[in-house]
Image (cartoon, rainbow, N blue to C red; front, top):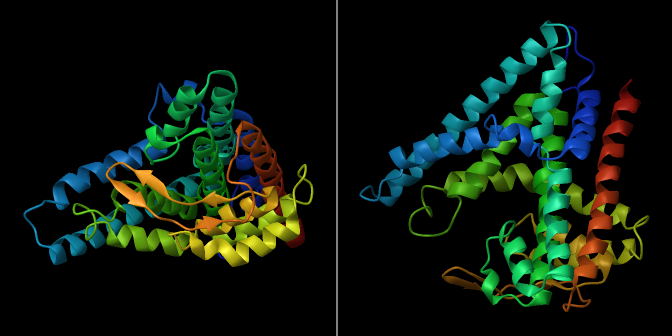
Length: 331
């Protein structure tokens, strides 16, 4: 573990625990068989957010009041997440072998295998079952209107989601665990869930979700750029990957994304694979005229999803390798 978080007692070093969590997630994935019996930690977080949303975000309140209550929501959720993480970490370091539970909790907050499988489902649906099946599969991982997507749009949406979530669901959780242990990763996932639930720019959440969206931007600022660099490095070993083009595209086109962070891994992946991602898109009730990211082909297919998955796998290995390298350097 980096010096920001001190370990003691019976547990191994925190970076070693992080490596084990990454390995466990890579092997077991979403563990749906288990979370049919008990609620997933993110589901628990989501239920708490939904309950506070109903209580605090009432339409009769003014915009200023709703913004203030949105700040209160963030403070409550972040404080509880940090406290729960600190308690689990303390117990894990006092009781023999209890650190295994911390590894398990951390693994549930990562999504390497789960993300791979969801995106692979889109490729296999397009390949074997056709456009409608592809639209259904991609609707499970993106928020845009799938009915407006042709085969190329479905493929691009899947690749964009893969790139963006490499940062949000792999690099960023690992980054915050490396700095602050279980409290760090729990706080990050809480803020990320807050943003996904209330961080919208519509009438209901524009004020109430302001604090959640801004804090999510802050927490993802470094991890998103790190994720882009890892994708660039992964292009060195991925089939037909182009690391130089990935680097150039990332620094040139990342700003074309409406998010201050998502464009970095997305642009790196577009450049590495020689694709054009982004572009105009349609969400339910909203059309976004986004600029293109990358100067390659926009007419993507399931074969390009497969190439993106190979690049993603290499990037996940490099992310784990980076954790191992930092751990080895401080031993």
